[in-house]
Length: 182
Ligand SMILES: [Zn+2]
Image (cartoon, rainbow, N blue to C red):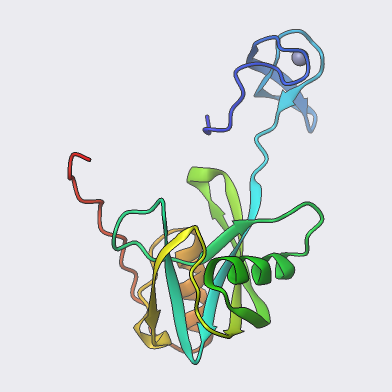
């Protein structure tokens, strides 16, 4: 189960259990309320946006406060209710890098299995002066040809964008976090 799984029914507070639920003419096992109140936890993925930010001809990758040293990736964030994905990209890039997005185009949609998310990834051309927001601890700038995509979710978006530019793609995974005992 994902970390978001409920232990108790959010409607009536009874426990949830795996139960057979009708689906497309058959039944599937889903976590559902034992009290027949009708609640089923479908586990639908959460959409999020990712921005491959281009600034002065270079790509900016960012390290989130929660990530180990050496991990740099796209600027990401969740959509607000009823927010257009392109507007969410502009908002996140402004909040996390202080830059104004002047142009955003969809690269593609990518499944992020570990967090049960679908990442809507955009190439975002931005201008202005870099000013890191609260979630970002550091950034790195790359010539597009020097990017090394990581083999999951937003890394596949980087690879697809590079291929669209005729650039050679070499995947390099993030280094395992250093064991510091901390
Ligand atoms: Zn219930």
